[in-house]
Length: 256
Ligand SMILES: Nc1ncnc2c1ncn2[C@@H]1O[C@H](COP(=O)(O)OP(=O)(O)O)[C@@H](O)[C@H]1O
Ligand SMILES: [Mg+2]
Image 1 (cartoon, rainbow, N blue to C red):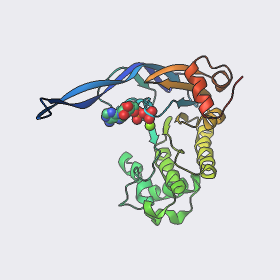
Image 2 (cartoon, rainbow, N blue to C red; image 1 turned 90 degrees about the horizontal axis):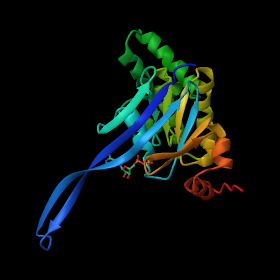
Image 3 (cartoon, rainbow, N blue to C red; image 1 turned 30 degrees about the vertical axis):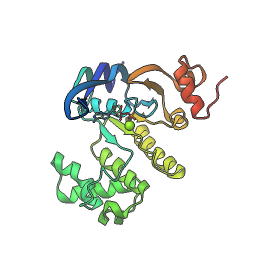
Image 4 (tube, rainbow, N blue to C red; image 1 turned 45 degrees about the vertical axis):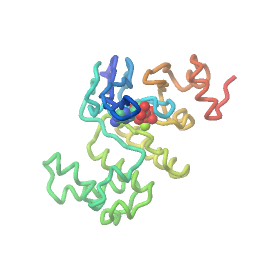
């Protein structure tokens, strides 16, 4: 069997929090740093080309898991093993992940400049290819992020991610802020490289319907723990946990 693209074993992570204490009629306050554990013993694997859905209510630790996998949370223990290269990330708010000072062409070219080994004309050629691939017209290269719609911006973010030929993409609520019709287009756009280049996708979403449609495997997270995992059929038709049932019911999905 092939090596998994991502292996996560007994991952724990903590955030530091400032806590204020008031003494003697609040005349004297003291702040103290305390650690709060967000992830608890998270373990799972992702195979090449697999789409894994991560669902759970807001604040349960989904984004923290993504950040911890990417090495953006320093206080952690456990193991994260990524088979090849750095995973790429697509976020809910494409505006904040695009530098407003630069034109789209420049933004798409940046990963190639950083990587090196491309002539300027080859880079520009690749930018044009990528624009076509993510369904944007060539003149978009000359525009700034603020001159694009939300859907177009998310296409650019996906283009930037794909430029780096990742084996793994983490999409954190990547379509949650978009209209339903645009959502569908962006999901189709993510599914294309998934099929063409066996791109594995960790699809973080609170939309259980979308997850059911596109994922091979579903992880249910509650309070920083993966409490249940399985195929969409298992999770949606034979949920083991009461919490999973509650999530499904809240999404208007009724199981017998
Ligand atoms: N940078 C941070 N510092 C301290 N606490 C954080 C930070 N980011 C998130 N949290 C807290 O960690 C918990 C999990 O947050 P998050 O991973 O963003 O949840 P989700 O993505 O599932 O909505 C929440 O209680 C949140 O308030
Ligand atoms: Mg989140």
